[in-house]
Image (cartoon, rainbow, N blue to C red; front, top):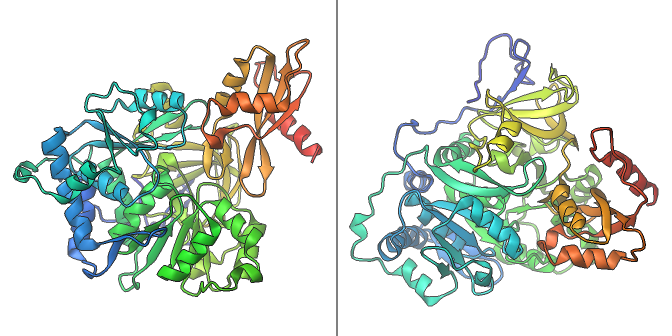
Length: 548
């Protein structure tokens, strides 16, 4: 757990401790309940709403595409009723896991909270994932039951003990609305140390891993939000354009509902639909990934803005991937009344551990804000492991109550990412200035960030190597204005092979989710490698950029 010593060794502006070479958060400390108190994430959230109840006429959930909404009293009723139904009708119980495969919908936040209240582990996945990818994820989380839609259910294997429940069925609707007579049995004790969620991440390299978080992780994250929350802040209507299965979208749901604000959401992103929603529902906050901001700038000229009233918009929060400085500058020029907030985090840290609070911090050029409550950071020289002072570039190591428990069933990957003292090695190069603001510089890990999604080159390389016409291959990030980065493959063809770019793209596209598709291919005589056989990606990146 991060500490906030106030001794002379800690700089009151940067939070840097000259003795330990560690940066400390200078935010107010959060006040989560005692760790020994039996408490689920759901019960913590509902207790906050009970303590500071929103008006009964306040929508908790709002489908921006249809206008359908659920007021807070009904939202709370549905969470409790569904939990009782899941327990009495399905026999779901503490410690079991539920795999969720669905696009954003009114049902998802209710489902997640209902499951968590029972002590059932929630494991959401991208509905665009391929069948082999889903099979791999299911082998990690070992679910008892799955929740899907009629459009995604065919991807779920038939081997789950309790089968697959359709979220868009009359049966599920009834489970949310009709409280079973045995509801009194719904007295399940959930420990804060119990596993709450398994989210999916590629980690630093390689195949997808299951990131394990306890109820305590999420409770502390919400307590940290509450610590900096302005109690007199007006009601917010927050539009989430990020998928709820993504760590950013998953956490954002809890944050908005915790404060009694309205969580609006979109299914498939559409720029004009988003602008119509901002006007129609008087949206104050938008949570998005960089491609949304780029789309705004690409199409958001004066003519595009005509006919849309965006005056209610106050904050655009961006996460999932870095946002270019030039993009932020253009956005601020186009929407001068809007705060553009960019945080820093990763799936392994329940979302973000750094971000701006208020307009003054938002205006700091190029920064990702200050450390979140209770967080410690070291900036470490990657080669030597030496902790560095302010303004020095190095790898970010994070420690605190938001950091994951580990990767499910993968002790080696956990040990590589988390050291014995609880420091999570992010693989990102950053620095912190003398005012405590963090600045993202570059990645030392090999992940490609496509529209906020993580794409592991190793996974695509394994597939490329399986093709009989390919001798060797390497995948690199190629810069793209809209997506941030796209996967580009360098391929060594087998002697006599005439395989072309389109054939390679099609070969990969059939086996992966859409966001993992290879978007560019270049042919090369040999993949540059060092003496250990490691691909020299920087050389390939230079080669690719030289042909821009």
